[in-house]
Length: 442
Image (tube, rainbow, N blue to C red; front, side, top):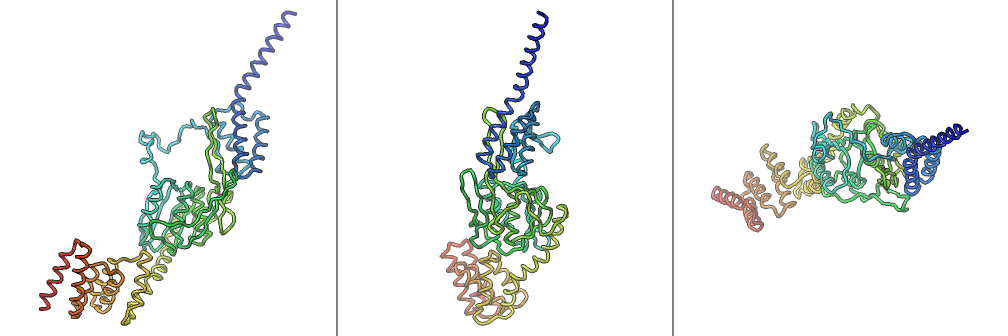
């Protein structure tokens, strides 16, 4: 009897031990999952999907599906199971102590500093055929990131077509996406609305003013891949919906929901929850789950070559549209030269030409012996830039070569007077030019 009682007592202790072991391995994860369920229901953009996901997680907890997993495996498993219901690639549960993966075999101490990581702007260049190329890694949210956008778009001012590479761009700040998009529109357009369920608020993303000159008409090609995601898709989708770009490459990843991070108190876990959804003004929807479908579907590795091929012809067409009217105006000069001035003024306001470009154009005709055209160009420059001493000096020089000495003298004098008024560093040069002309005329 005593032996039976002893065995019964031992069995009872074993059961208690096993129960405690199970609960020790189970309870912390279950509490974490329950906290995740609360956060999902309070914040996830689609309440019905949050509830469906939570019901699925209840079944998993009941079945003991979270038992015995390492923190890393638990984080991966929970992410996978939530996505199996939501199909949302932005939804992610993380273990914050997960070692950061590096592509390098031996990570360097310098990898800890942002200056040695991949920059937002991988690079840009002007390719053959006057085609601009921009490679963006992501859309940073700091002021210096928008300054980088200004920098590269300033360099692209002379491009007759622009290729923007989004094939390795994983997204980023919607504000920076909107800023880059704004460079390609002159009109004050509402591009997207971002709706948040948690606070029932909508943020409108309008075309904004940019620090650099806009390019509302330049041909644009955007390269995509299956890795193009989130903000990079936003830019591609917005430009495509407004017919401002041709998309070339692969269907993109399909993530249209901005996220917010929530730490799980008392743990090393956290969750990124999509709390809002982007609604495009044109399509009334977005690219969530479907991705952006390219206008020209092809392997991402071949997309750049195809874009270059198409851009070459479009660049010629664009260039002709810009400069053909000016060429026609110069070929049919009239006494008042109003059409010439009109075409030059348009190119100035578009950021295509400036005072010095026009001056250079005048000298190119002067060197070819086409004096009447050169004089008309220099004269137009004095009308367009009346506060510049240099334009009067150049105009005077052209007049002198055509023996229009009286008018040449007037403009040499204007150059000196304007330079003196503006404290121009080249005042002495203009004075010497006036003196040399007078000596030669006498």
